[in-house]
Amino acid sequence: MVLQAITNVRATVCTAKHTISNFGLSKDKTSMAVKAELRGEDMHCFLSKVVDVVMPKIKEYKGVSGGSGDGSGNLAFGLPASAVGMFPEVEINYDAYPPKMIPSVDVIVCTTATNDRDARVFLSSMGIPFHGKHKN
Image (cartoon, rainbow, N blue to C red; front, side, top):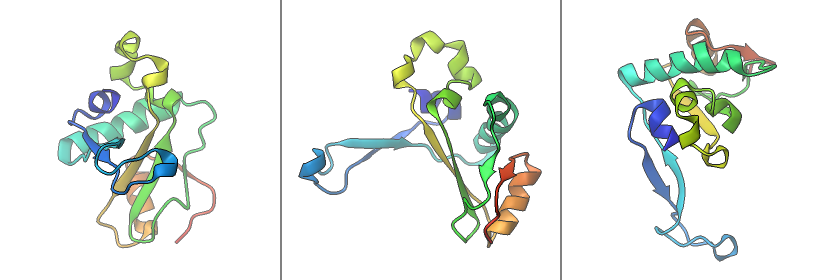
């Protein structure tokens, strides 16, 4: 599993909470996504790989959108499947991961900041670039 390889944390499977027949979903039987909660050293290692290795390799990458916060200090950004393939753990074993099996990744960074401005300052000091109009 790609997520476990790039995060070094066991991923958990999220299942559907409601049955929606139009989409073919049945409650607690359909796997919807996987998630991994990173804390401490694993979190710092993952963010440093994203900032130092993956983001510089993305062509014409402007940075994280300035309005990506939720108002309470949490910021989110996404990495397309092509960018996930640039992680060192995936590049080494690229034959083990067929291109159709490499997912895109949504990263949500939860900080102790009380507003988005403080969170952006904190993450900018860690090396994450921001672009566009900043939302307070």
